[in-house]
Length: 91
Image (cartoon, rainbow, N blue to C red; front, side, top):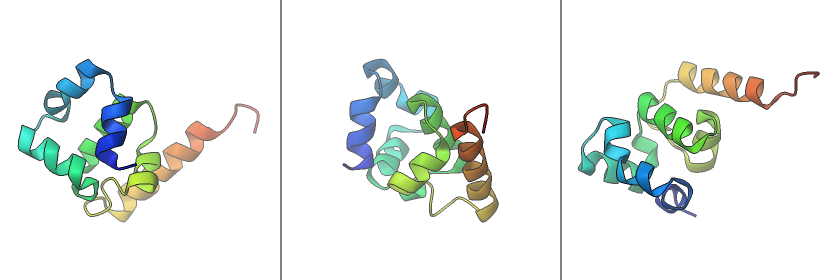
């Protein structure tokens, strides 16, 4: 499944229609990200993670979201947050 298909099937109709507003971007930029998720900025990766109720690292691993623009430090921070969120309270 492409990132564009994933977004269309997992966001509410309202969130999908307001995606430019959520991303604070133009319709053109939204289309570019949906078709080539590698170009997403850190801010855009975080917005998608929030809208989809998942971690930025999950989107990075599954769809390469932001892989061309995220720094190694940002990726590491997303990975650490993902690992912390995945733990159960008694691990």
